[in-house]
Image (cartoon, rainbow, N blue to C red; front, side, top):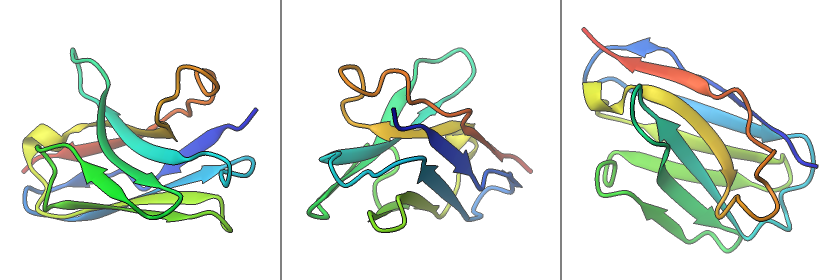
Length: 118
């Protein structure tokens, strides 16, 4: 069973940038679409960005134009470059397959905290 480990979260001022990384314990080559999710306090987990094995990317409207997702199957890594961060981006960020509920429901990592505040 693949497990994911996220890192790169930090406290950053509004308008700042961060790059999050996610490393898998096993191969992600067979996972067609990987995603970054986030969960803010008191809110449900939401999918913010996805990338397929072919490199097709999709973003939630709330992050479009500010976030970029990357994938490196050889390094078993998925990254999220975030620019122009806003206080509403504050959340714990996770990576996982999209969809996750069939084969990767137990693959969640601890996440990485992103706090955007002045």
